[in-house]
Amino acid sequence: MQLLGLIIWAQMQVGFEGGAGLTHRIPVRRDAVWNGTFQNLGGEQRQPGLFALSGFALRYVYKPDRFIESGGAVRFHQVRIGGRVESFWTAMVPIRWGTQIDTSSWWVWGGLGASLLLRARSQPDSSQVYRFADYFSRSQLLLQLGAERALSQRWAIGIQLTWEITSAWDRVLFHDSRSLPRHLMMTPYLRYMPWGWR
Image (cartoon, rainbow, N blue to C red; front, side, top):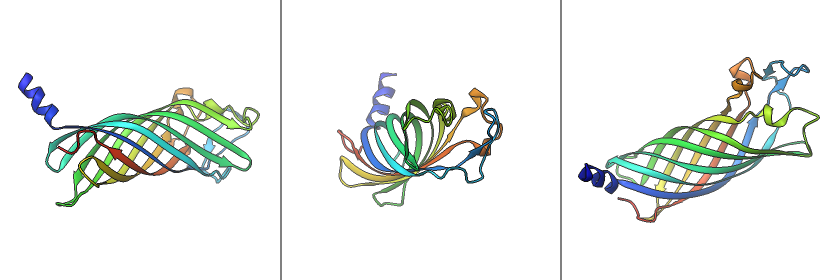
């Protein structure tokens, strides 16, 4: 058992990553009645806002050109509407699978994960418009695609595209999954691996 543990650990990589980019929320419109259904009819157009990410990943390379990894990250993002800025702090836990492109230094990966809303704030306050925390719920489902290139034994750069859908069923606010708030995020990132590629 100890030998098996050492073999697995020898194929593990620890990485720390951070990045910044933009986020865009697909607009929705809701009825005047609070328990009405949201509709994708244009609604309020929210402009792209800032996005920042910081986290770590534990990668298991189970084949020379295959890996699976998980980790955690804290994310900050904003969307803008008129004179109002909506800001979010979120904790994320993704699971990613990736493969190397031939013998190049490029890797491509896809992932599935969840995020938990830690804090939501609107300036000026949106309480007279809608119940802000309820509207954005407290948990989200994430789908990710990305590409990463090794620069050296310890450094890599990459870009990731995240599709996030708000799972507001727990508050019985939505009746149609197609009308749930969704965010689309594009993020260049930089990754550092203290012990290098193995």
